[in-house]
Length: 176
Image (tube, rainbow, N blue to C red; front, side):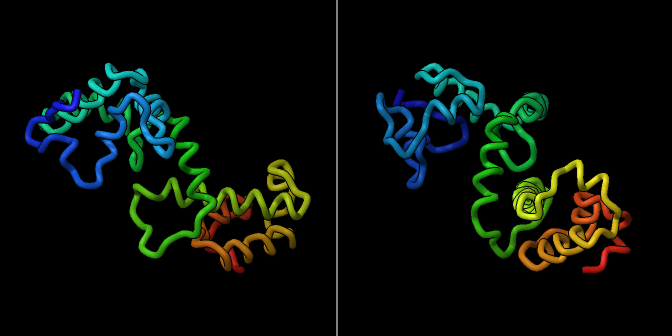
């Protein structure tokens, strides 16, 4: 198994910062979850699963547009090569860390929004409000304005996202 090669790429185990060779061990280090990694890619947690992963990498490297499109539809959703369940877990983890300068582009938009959603949920909970209250209350309810103001102060949430999430009407009218 150590000799798996991916066409056009050096042997995977030769990359200085690759976790790949560690996944091949009978018992990978505790900090690596081979089963979680392979499950996210919908491969079995076995040497066979690692072979399938190597085949996946080979297909990507070969540049066959048709095969790549097929694989991309199955595994990709912009920022993550993983199942929907795994992406949801990653979003939760990102929501717990400070947003770093330079986060930009479509690939991180879902992560950013996940972070903003977590912040909004916290504000709603502290205000004793629910999603039902958001839709039932006036667009300019004082508690909505307070939450919008706090989101603008503590996050990089955009006016359109805040207006939509708090059901406050057109973003152009949002004044915080």
